Amino acid sequence: MVRAAYDLFSANGYLGTTIVAVAKEAGVAVPTIYYTFGTKAALLEESLGAAIVGFDRWREPPPDPQIKDLLPLHPWWADFQAAPTSEAAFDIFFTHGVAILERVAPLVATLHGAAGDLDAAKVARVSENRRVESYRESVRVMAGKPGGLRSGLTSGQGTDILVVLFSAELYHSIRTGRGWSAARTTGFLHELLSAQLLGV
Image (cartoon, rainbow, N blue to C red; front, side, top):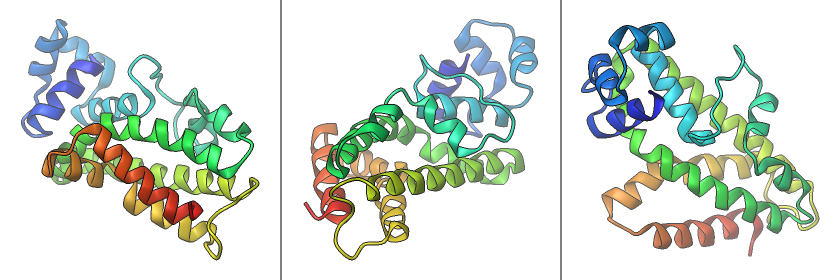
């Protein structure tokens, strides 16, 4: 059901996706969708969460989770924390982060189009806050490793760089707006971010 909702949200946006259409796509009865998720906004939240973590790993988090509860949901997080240098940690973060952006980018228009729905707008706002928090923690980890951040760059500045340049919006504008391939986009962002964060 979550994958069906993701596909329809990606194709038709928030307003263009109905619970009836999701039920049909998922092959379930309409009441099943309502019983499981309650509202279309909740279905959007589940779709976004699954896109971030991965559809095969997604489990609904506990109510009001802290970022320390959410980051370990990523199977690569332990390897990131254990990386011996900031450059090695960055490579792990970047590789898996690009995969997340590739999955989340199709929902960008949906999230912007949901602004008129208070519940859906809250989903987008909470998700963005969590993205900032996760980037802040990721930069903190990289800064504390041998090699650290680029000379003169603070963790706060590093977080700002990631928030602006490593976003689904920018990724979507490059991949869809400019028509770049995934490989070209990945190479461009890796070169840009590694120079900005690590000075390499």
